[in-house]
Picture (cartoon, rainbow over the protein chains, first blue to last red):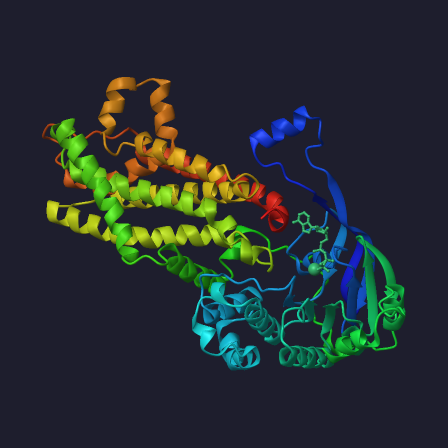
Length: 256
Length: 299
Ligand SMILES: Nc1ncnc2c1ncn2[C@@H]1O[C@H](COP(=O)(O)OP(=O)(O)OP(=O)(O)O)[C@@H](O)[C@H]1O
Ligand SMILES: [Mg+2]
């Protein structure tokens, strides 16, 4: 058996720009001879292989298809062309904010999320304190997550995913909404995950943290895989290290 | 492409490479019983969230409906005189019709309502309509209890065949409700019109089964014609009749007028209808698995 953890080959994902939903809209669009659904490729013929235990930094400008690629890897979306294959359990946080049910309390959502990630009741009970300690939402644990601040739901969502048993860990925009102390904890936890030999797939706009966490960078450019290789070259490819960016920007990046 | 960092060959899970998000459909839902239990619990909480009376509403609604039917149909229209134990006739039918419409309407909305989870996490999405069906079943239990008390007070002497008929009727309604919930929950993601269709169908369903009128009215009108056959092929009518065979017929006296009438070959018809419902369920599952790949992007 091979040691591949994620195999993505020739993957394409097509989205429709605008969905005409009502009969009126469809009729008007047809009369004006507008196309009924203009489509574009959010992920365009992307291929790469990740071996178990690698830490990948996925970078790219806004809208370049990073979250979409992560959704394809986690199985939330299906590719329109090509194949995605993964080995073992996948956990993670996609596109800031966890899959929470707003009416349920934080506690119930932890159990529900953990169950969806494939954890048994006993397993969740065992890890519950760890998760709660990490998320540190305090007394809000028993209030509906619909009333959480975006930082709080991100914390709880990250905590569940980070302590679930998984072989592949996806982290998308985890640091975008967290405060400084939480960002530090997240990076620490991801370093642990990496040290445990789990495959890490980390999406970030901060070159500093990618440099620290990852062994390899992928850069998406409007859905196409523009770069696949060493982190420093990837950052250079994206011009995130360009001279006009003030040095303290990267300092912040390194900080978080 | 190659990296200096060694992969962790010892950490490689002892599993093959698989396509993520392929959960294998309806029968796998029942394998993940723990998750299903959590979802059912969640649905139970959510259905009456923020309502002061909570679960009481699932008694009030059927009670009011029952009274309306009984008073209007029984007394104003005078059907009371034409049917033995007319309240039981109505109520037995209502339990099944209510179970069906609840499963159908809650199930149809289930995928859209759980969009937050579906857009972020990968799981067998059939879970949601199945959970709706189970929650509807749970809400039907108290009504069944009331029905049981009512038939016992009236005097009830069912045979084993009657019990079989009742179970068969329940199986038909559950299967048919599940099949439609699965189909419409997927369709509802693409066009939200579908949950309006469900309400329209709900009105039709109430009249399509012998609940507020007895079967002999149908037999009088269209007995022996193809229309009667079509009427009896309707899973709702069929399930209701089978259910009444257990909860109404054994309380009546076959020798006093008005003589309670049931269609011939009721059990055989029931088995055929159940088989047909299973085929519809398989078809719905097939459609669902075609469409579910697009749920996350269309929600
Ligand atoms: N469900 C959807 N329907 C239509 N278009 C979509 C859908 N989801 C994403 N897109 C489009 O696909 C493109 C890629 O989006 P994606 O979220 O993957 O970007 P990203 O690289 O994660 O960006 P960011 O850095 O802002 O997080 C965007 O143009 C976006 O508008
Ligand atoms: Mg994104």
